[in-house]
Length: 341
Image 1 (spheres, one colour):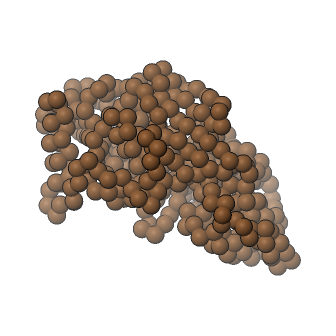
Image 2 (tube, helix red, strand yellow):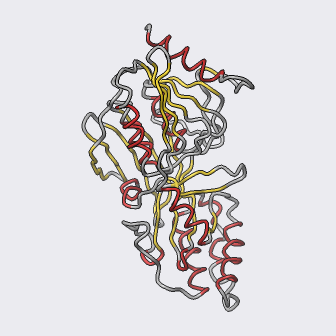
Image 3 (spheres, helix red, strand yellow):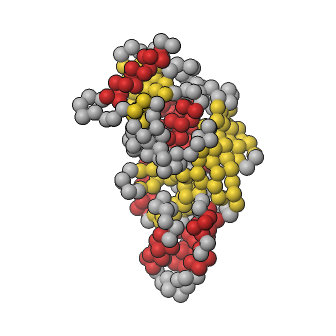
């Protein structure tokens, strides 16, 4: 539902977890229009709710959207578990945390107003991409996050600033992910055509399937058999060699881009095995400027593989060095080798 992703300016909403790295998911839903995505993340607010209504909004959202339905067998018992006991919103928050904890998914959780506001600020971050020319006419692009709506524009600007580059290195090390649509747009800057990703999951109480695919002229969003088209950026790299740098903190949208470019024969991968986050989340906006994040889909590479819990193995495994940058050195070497073919 990246048609929904676009309307919500989302693809991986901010999630904090074990290693304290930030990962993002894919959609934003407003509680005043349950399961109808807001066109403007900051412009729509939920109607005021009682603590019990607040709690039930979260219960219904999880019921209709949670990916692993086998964990929902006893979900109905939570609907009225706290009836008459939720006198304040603090009571509701404690009950929500207990309820969501039963799903045993640390990507599905309640976000208080402070965390929700931080997510919005991160989406507007700028200067998330840096670049430079390396010796032998190799262009180097470091993408810090896909969690900014400016990421793909900054990558495009970097490519235009290095017209003499004969090969490119994309550094996704420590990039925990971001918006799916931003990663898809970056894919279009390096590829003429090909499938970017496929997603399957639950949405609005029904199963859904979606494919993001690139053609020579358009970006296609095929959701449950219905195709929507979007103007694509120009492939600014042609068929020039591309090498991607990854490590154990490359996750989510970073893995999506890496897998898509490799499966479409547009890139080689150097570094260490990636994190292995192959699931997507939506964020439901709630009353009081809070929100709840829910895992609703799993994504697959063009070749059909899923990396959730597994990660991507690089074509050339190189550990981080204590001095210098052995991984970058190997990436440069590989790029030069590709130029001689």
